[in-house]
Image (cartoon, rainbow, N blue to C red; front, side, top):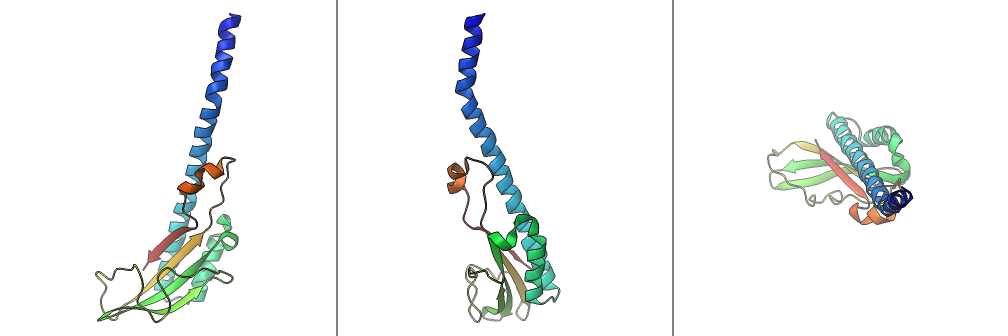
Length: 161
């Protein structure tokens, strides 16, 4: 009996680190996916609000308020752009960034054609609103360094209305 219980303890000691690693990996991945889903929801909500005629700086206030559970003001920022559709293409007409946010829009600057933005199905004369969200993810497990390469830095979400 003593020999088999010693064997069980040895097997448990060998398997425990692997099981702990897998468990914490699932926790970290689940948290990262939940944050990403929250950012997607936040960008869609903000773009929807912008498309209803809300001032762009007010949209940024809504993003900051609704992202408070993610500590959005401390860990990220957003850019709201108004894009006009011309007969010959698109143009960024107006753009506002979160206060204190040092990042830039991945679409480009005001007065330029948006980069990496398809205009399929957009009619000339229409206006579209794009909300870009940038967020630095903060890991919650001690094995965070092992998972850093699996997550983009910053997490980027974009919604168009």
